Length: 531
Image 1 (cartoon, rainbow, N blue to C red):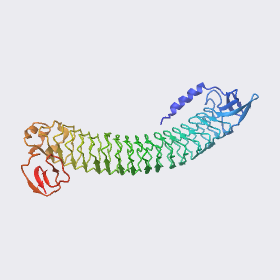
Image 2: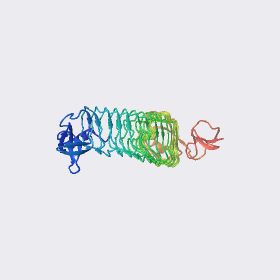
Image 3: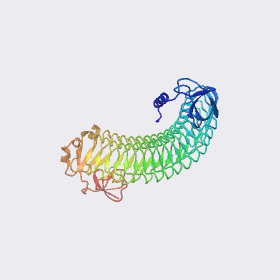
Image 4: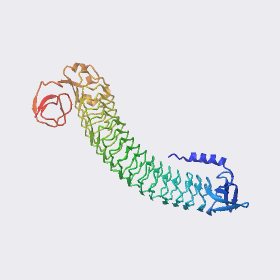
């Protein structure tokens, strides 16, 4: 949150040291003359700065419409900056209809005030007027007010009721920040903007409305509103900004209209009760950590309109069981589905060119994934610790496998490295201790470090290389650590008649075939006719 108490203290100090002493006092109320010509005054504090005296106001105070001093009658038109600042024993203030303005921090830390009524005559309000009025329970605002100012009711922890006039068109930044007792609120239809952090940490807020004319709900407006269950976004809104509903841990139902084009950074961060969400086909971007730690999220459909998904967008969505990524997505952040431990089914549409860094890392329920032949790169740690992954088809389009890409894929049994592969990074297949068969389609041994595999793999797995290339592989580490056999990846020198079974099946180009039709395939290193 932007408001920092230290900064506020400095601001108050700057103001205090430059403030003018009160001009006169009548019946225990201190005044400053604001216009001698118009004969107007405002309520102020005693002395030269706001806390020179403590509790100069206490109990009940009725501000008069007019006050006479030295034979001159003045109209009371304002309550000045920090006028009642830290008057902790002030219980009640009656504001007359002559008052048109209330200055910033006017009632700050007046702990004993429990209710306030602002008359229709007031049209100008400063920021933080009731900041830290922890005893304030109810507020009635007059029809002259068009804006709830920044931090106006911040930390009014006992506030349970507020009546908005229909004249209000905007709710400022942090206006109700940490109003922990506020359970329901009716926002007028005329409101078009809600500032950042406006209702942040209103932990008991459950019932509220978003007017149909709202065009802006700024960052973190409802963050940490732990009791919100349902939200309906109006069609007037085009974006869900940073952290707008972050940490709304009870939010289980939200409807996003097709006017929204972007789901901002952390928009639903740690919404732990959210089970499903329908993203409209107007959305083009899902920003970083948008659904991070939505632990109950089971279903999400990414529409064809989306072109970018930011890093960690769905990390820690433990219940997510399936996802389809359309080929319109061209920009991927890192770790998009990292630690989605329930993820079983993934569909990557043709057109995607890269599996990003740690994209499916620690997806421990992922048993298979079909990588489209548009992919050219598998990023660092892309499938790190996918401990249920048994088979994976790496298409001939892939030229690079980065470090740790398949590290700790404990159930991975068969591996095919096509002749298009140019580089394999460190520990790419480390601790994949159940690999029994590795087929490398390149005639010339690929340069790689010894640590791409671990000792168990070297001792258990058989390496198949193209006919005539065994000698090349026996001269190069790490391939010379395997027991090497040659096989014909393209020609047919042996045939067996065999029905389709559970074996890993390759076509004559060395690509894994999941559902082979009748024809000639490579099965267990032999050319086989499948009937």
